[in-house]
Length: 178
Image (tube, rainbow, N blue to C red; front, top):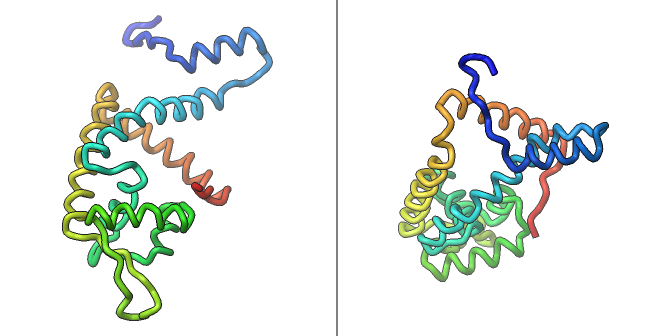
């Protein structure tokens, strides 16, 4: 190993790839080096993210709804159709989430002034505050997972993942959560 090169320790994915290299030496497992790590990272951080949201009385899906309303900007209201398109879930799944959020006082549903047949989902003041507080706590928690990477490495990783995701998003229709 040359001067200035840090020895990287082997992670779970590299151990799996080494096993496959031994068993199937002709198989290129490069996709696992990237996608397998992305999947493993998501699974490793998920409990922390869920715990953070639970501390605000929310599950991940409920946070997604109120954060979508919050980031939509004033007047912090969207139609259910716009919401479920942003969230890529079924209308039935959204209806269930909206019921729980309305009961908690984080959103309200009201008739549209423009079209009395349409309903709008409106973020309440409590929902506005809860969305921001939960997001701030989540970002602080998630930043800890990235602390071992210097800012340049974080930026490079983010750019590479953005490039890959943008390609995949344009090539395949979005999947819908049931």
